[in-house]
Image (tube, rainbow, N blue to C red; front, side, top):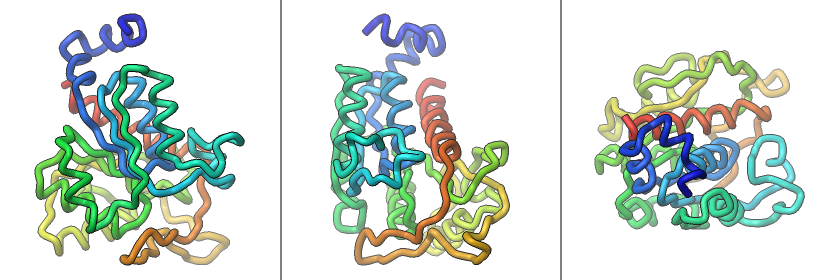
Length: 243
C-alpha cells in the first residue's frame, strides 16, 4: 500500500494522505459523472466509499460511463463500481447501496457520518432533496449540474451554485432551493455552454416524477464531458480534505 499511494504522499504529504485514508464519502448517482468521480476517489486513497444508485448498466451507457462494458450490461451499477474500487485498493471499505435516493430513505442514507457527499444525480427532485438535506445538516456537498448536450470542455467551471451563469439546471436549482431556505455554500461543477436543442427542438432532462425514479428524457451525451465533470467534482472534494 505504501507504493500504491506513494505519488499521493509526495503531492499531499503524510498528513494530507492520512486525511484521505480516514475520510468517508458518499457518491450518489453512479452514472457518467458519478462513476468517474468514485474511481478518482478510490485511486486517491479515500478510505470509505458509499455508492448509491438504483440503476443497472445499459448498452447506451457504454459511450460515457467507466463501468459500462460488454460484460457488465444488466448488472447493478453500484456492484460493478464497488468491484472496480476494491480492485484499485483492496483495503478500501466500499458499500454499494442499490436504492433510489428519496424522502423515505434520505435520513437513513445520510445519517452515516459522511465527511462529504458528491451529488451526481440527474433528476431534479432527488437532487433538490439531497442538497437541501446536506446543507441543513452541515454536510459538505459537491454537486454536478447538467453534463448532457454539452461539447465544449473549456466552458466547464467550478463555483458556488448561486454564482453560476447560463446553466438551465442551476437556474432551476437556485429557484427551488431558495424556496426551501437553502442559501450559498454548495460547490458545483457546471457548464456555461449555451443550450443545444435536441433535434432542433427544446427538450429538457429535468422531467421528473416525485413518486419514484422515472427516467428523464434522453439527451445527447459525449464520451468526455461527463467524465470531466466527475473528475472535477472528485478533485474539489480531495482539495477540501487535504488543504
